[in-house]
Image 1 (cartoon, rainbow, N blue to C red):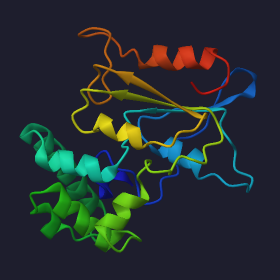
Image 2: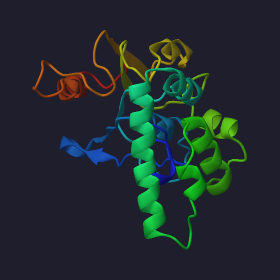
Image 3: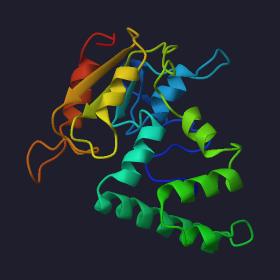
Length: 212
């Protein structure tokens, strides 16, 4: 389940969101994170279904950078994620007391300490650095993309440093849309209205099947 990892970070072995089928049996892979892009980049011939398009809204580009921003950034964001994660962990321990003893982790007060303890205790990764590096989508991780893929980033995202976009692989299968505003997965047309992400996805789906 997702309760064993910090909010905003992928699972130990992210399978990615489900492939959705559109008109004419075309398959599309929507998502609000990096798992869909990582899934398509890591796909190998083996009978897996391949999507026609992949979309990611505010994906974690470099987990190292995101964790650093959470630790060094605004207190309100850090406390929000820590408390949200602790509630999830407490619920996981309540449901599976024979598997999890998280009492010491629930007493920790930083994302780094909590993540490090969870990774070492409950994942196949030996170190926090290995975990974070393994799920970065920068520095060539997406070089093997084989389907048109699209990422939407906001310059004012408080937890995803947009500068990391410069480290994304330069491939014709990946297009990146930069928005001045949008926060983290916000992108509202105006206060109280729906996000314009749906319009962004629809426009791309109606365009020729090529990134960019």
